[in-house]
Image 1 (cartoon, rainbow, N blue to C red):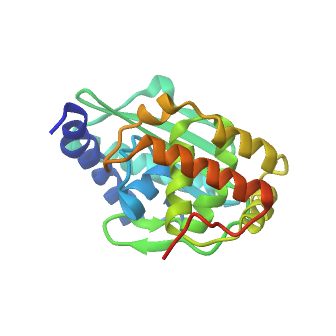
Image 2 (image 1 turned 90 degrees about the vertical axis):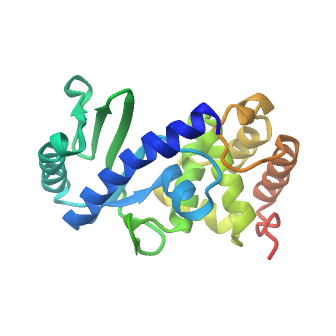
Amino acid sequence: MSDYVKYYLENLYPFQDGILNILKKLKTPFYLTGGTALSRIYFNHRFSDDLDFFVNSQKDFDIYCSLILEELYKCADELEYTFDSERIKKSDTYVRIYLIKSEIELKIDFVSDVNFRIDRPFFYENYGLVDTWKNILVNKVSALYRFEPKDIVDLWMLAKNFLFDWRIVFKYASRKDAGIDPQTVFEIITTIPKEYLKSLKWIQDVDIEDIYNDLKHIGNDIINGNINTLFSE
């Protein structure tokens, strides 16, 4: 077992599990989304560091965040972590905190997203409310503008495993972010350097050349407004 695999399996993921259990018991409308939801629940393809919790246009966002933070403070001694108080960030629709346990740092984001979403979050044992793959897919398209390889790889995994229409995906994505452009997304995913793909902490054995070719395939589907043809049952 490599050092980074041991770090995730024996340190970070158990830490995440403890936090997920706290939030699950609170029964707030926040749901787990993003790369950690994809990796830990859907695909188990790469290791993911952060926890992202969303709600949609929640008028009581501040109240729920305060409830969660209060409970996290209460559980700090029992689970042996501390808050990095200097890096707490808050706005009307966003809260970011960092929890520290020994040498482990866990970043947690709470976001009040736009009202529009695809399907309803579902309850998943041990994790609480979890986002749907369709909604994560639409959000991942928007996230590509961050130019991070993890988002591109997550998009690749979604395309490999689910059938959908790229035209509809972009139609939905534009309802969340009006600036989404298929041509720009095409350029982002088809020009990513292979070294960036290699830099991810993979769980599965992958062939980077195959991924690179698949991304070209996805790019062509996007620019031509096709059904996702990378998927095969």
